[in-house]
Image (tube, helix red, strand yellow):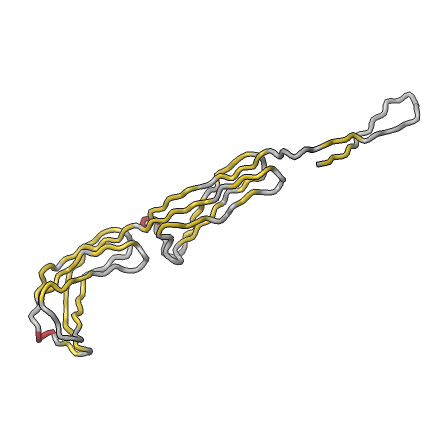
Length: 193
């Protein structure tokens, strides 16, 4: 039988990418398994070469390799792990001034997303007075996170507070005095609206 190493590609998922092989010609008895060992594996995004270093034919727990003539047609294969694409989007929002902060901390995560446990994201934009700010996205890195394993796109929204257009009526309070030749004033008022 003849076997050959393959080129293998996958998106980064935090797990090792090992060599792969194909049976080019010949066949095994039903229930037999060909176990092939390679020199290396890779986990992080990038490329490397791996090579077949050993092989054996197993019938359950018995090694029956001696019953076969095994030829390796192609001994080396390329391992490629591509970056994981992640798109982060923070929300935009607007409101009239009311004296309370405007916040939108939730970030939508699209694309391949982060590998579980490696990272999450939130937005930190906050505004209270009239104006606008970017709803900045922050990545909280967890165990195993490496920026080179990801291609991250950030779409940051805008938080805006506009002037309050509600009508406010200010009414001065009346005052009454008995004439005494002095100037008088009343510095109180009522606010409505």
